Image (cartoon, rainbow, N blue to C red; front, side, top):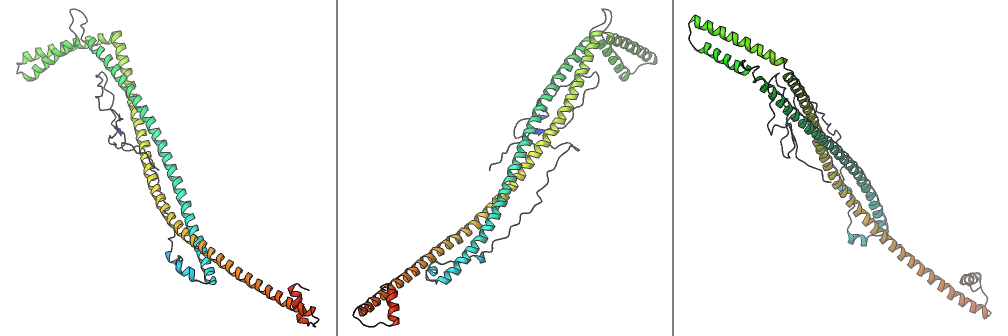
Length: 358
């Protein structure tokens, strides 16, 4: 029986959190996929706490009584030809009894071998079932990943639209939020790095405060912008769906890894049981060969005995025919005496009757 073998799929279990509010969605680079479907990839261990169902080791220890070779009947063909009938009858009984004993041992080994082969098939069937579940889950993982990537892309595009809207000035006289923030950043840098007199620094702080107030007012105006608000809401919704799909992908990936581990364990145990079955089969063959040896010699001795019986019967038949011929000859002699008028005694009459002439 040839068991299926295959390379394992790599599963990364690092959860990628959703972005902060307002932050740009970062798309995953190629190669950072949760499920690597290429063959030959290394198995990544599951996160701590992930459920792993351990299959119980087979507790049964197979014990078979060893065959005592000293009980085998030694047979030498030349000696069989020289043995008497009584010796051959005794040998035939011993060969028959030893054959029956060995047949029982062979039968027990065959029964155990067949049971182990059934167990092997059952474990392989379970392994195939786990493999099908794993492949199905891997397909679901890929679907969840595709959906997540699609939502991430959608959110990125929407947030990009919001960002572009921020760069637009409210009117011809108003500076954009981006320009105001850049000016504030420049003035704060001057405050931190340049040495100023008290009056100069106070004026600089007042200017920074004024710019921050303008920037805050401009952002409030942008928040009221319906188009920006709608895009931001859609982006947040897409980001939420991407996070949910990512969590679902992680859950499915963990389940796929569990099914893969179960499949590997079933194949391992199937190999173990199959090896035991092969060992028992070899022991069955040994017992059966010994039983066949004793059976063949039992048949040969039985044929020898039948041949001897036929020979004895032939000798007895010849003796009976010789006795009948002798009785007939004596009867004819007595009958000739009777025809000549000679007197016959009781013994003569009995012989005459035995010959069938009377």
